[in-house]
Length: 483
Image 1 (spheres, rainbow, N blue to C red):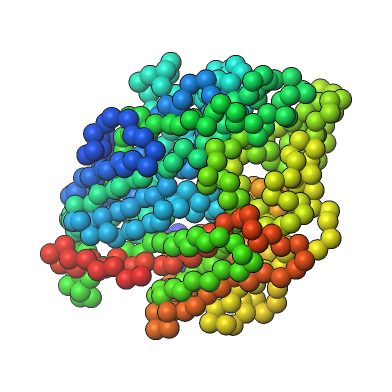
Image 2: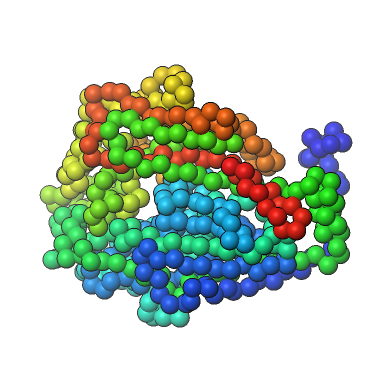
């Protein structure tokens, strides 16, 4: 209910703000408009003296890949490994070198959605984003035809785009600078083969899924990066007076946003790190095969899609049933960098994809997981796979996973184990900082495993520690960052 005690469904009062004007601006990078190679940086300086809408302001670009090596692109956000925001040269959002993993996990959970039009939502096997059919071994590239002079993709500013309040009065801040770091070429998939390719016959379409022969040099470039920003202004002056009054009364204004810290370690059955944070909201862990960071891999099938004719010798991944000729279902894939799996010895991390053994989890023995914070177990038991899934949904405040539709998909393609450390929120709630405060203790946190089916040699573990960050803005454009 509102402050007057009347439920919102019965409230007839209107709010009005007059003299609102909008305009959009296109910004070229301060680093120049030349193509940006993997591990390169792109910098944008944002306009000031207006109300900037951080949520809808996006970076647009197109992509050029190496020709004739069967290169395929991941989701657009996976092409950037880091997003950083500076104010007058002071870092106010540091991000991490694994921003692409943070973004991918949020998409898998359903906490964030990807636009199919500009976000390159799906792995494309037989045609490009603009509808052109791809011949055998041809790469997915967008530097010709429509992509000759048109940007086709767009990404937001990651967690910083969710800053509250949504509209930032940039006249109160110093010069804002956005810095994006391009990911390395391992974020691609390579489906090159001597014959067949992704569009080969039913027999060899499967056998080339992990074949990157001749494609080790596949790489990409970000071309024509541009940022467009949406800005508002209020001519009445009442808002500016209210802001000045608030700043004079309290001494500062507060802006709040998430900042996920990522800890990356080789998985040996447990991992340990320390963390000092004002508000630790959530801990998440994902496991990725070590080869994903060192080898340009082929396409990884999503369990539940089909990849070969049932009459052929290859595997049929169509768990949901037939959807095509001769019982062939719809094939779905992902890049190796987007695949997170439970680290099991059976099925092994390098098990055969073509025969379906790679995601056959009907094996004895488990991999149970548990968090420890200052030696206190959270939860106070080792979670089985069903409990891992339910705790993860609770931590992300969702009822079902956006991507995983059955247990085998969760374990092979989209595994994540998370616990909540703050009070659940709903979309209409005001911002509440209720996470675990570890500033006075510099807490030691570990992830432990138990069970007879653990693989402790072939996986990397990524710990995602989601924290609240407060940006305090004072008079004279002074700022203070509280983590």
